[in-house]
Structures are given as structure tokens and as C-alpha cells.
Length: 185
Image (cartoon, rainbow, N blue to C red; front, side):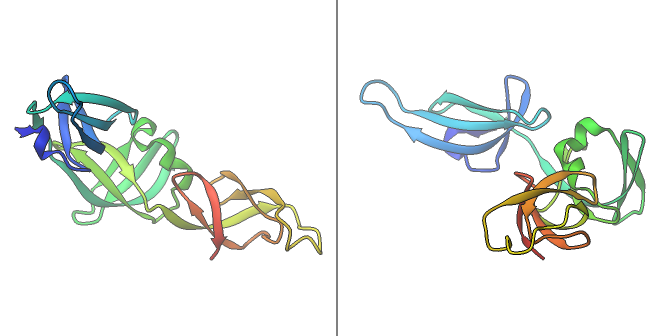
């Protein structure tokens, strides 16, 4: 059991029977009454974030979140197949668990599988990854210095905005949190 005084970023706790991870917290002492802890917590299974306030001294059950290295092998129908990097065992993962990460999965890519008490709850990838442009309209000569963008299709099929000087076959860095172009690789 952990108390509100033990709160830290990344701590996983059980709130109202649901698993949450603390993403932000602040001790608040109003002029009148007892101190409270303001927190932003992310639901580990649904991915939604909520703000809550807890009285100082409240106690919660601490949850164990572990990560294992996996390798993405291929997509079969709607499901995704991964291989454990230690035991070489293959697992099939439903699209609900993979979530928006599916837009950035490339064959043979190493990922982290997040487990909550031995149950797979999500797939995590680096914040910045390098991808190849598969389709892109040619840029107009002379416009390479301007701030204009065009649409391009990545190797996974995701469409993103890129500068005009990017062409088919170029490798670019993409921010997986926002899905935006970062720079040429």
C-alpha cells in the first residue's frame, strides 16, 4: 500500500478498482482545511487521462508494471504478431491493445510490451523513429526554402505532411506521439 505522500511520476496504483499511472502530481494546501494531492492519472487499459484530487494520507494499492522486449513480425488480418526476444515465443496481439502505435510498426522493429500483473496492456515504441517515404508528389523547384508542405505516404500507409523538398525513397524522422515530420534522416 502507498500513501499520497509516496506519489511520484510513473507510479501505478489501483483507483476505484481500475489501474492508473500517475503522470503529474502536486501537493496543495488551501488556506482552510487539510492538504490535498492533485494528480493527473492515465488509465492503463483505456489510455484516457483524468484529473483527480485525493485527501492527504489516502492509501492505494501499488501495481507492478513490467516491460519486455518484443519484435514486430507481421500483421495478419486485424491482429499483430510479435516475437519475444528472449524465448522466441510468438504472440498475437489484438488491435485494441496496440492502439495508435499500429501506424508506426515496421516489420522486424523492436518494441516494448507493457505488462500489468502478467497481463499485456500495451505496446510502446520510441518517441522518434525513422521511416521511408513510399509515395510523394514531386516538389516544385525553387520552393525548397519556403514553409510550404505536401502530403506523403509512409511505408506503413500513414499520410503525413512533409516539406516540399522531401521525395519518394527519402528517410525521415517522425514523432510517434504527434505523427508529425521532425527532420530528414
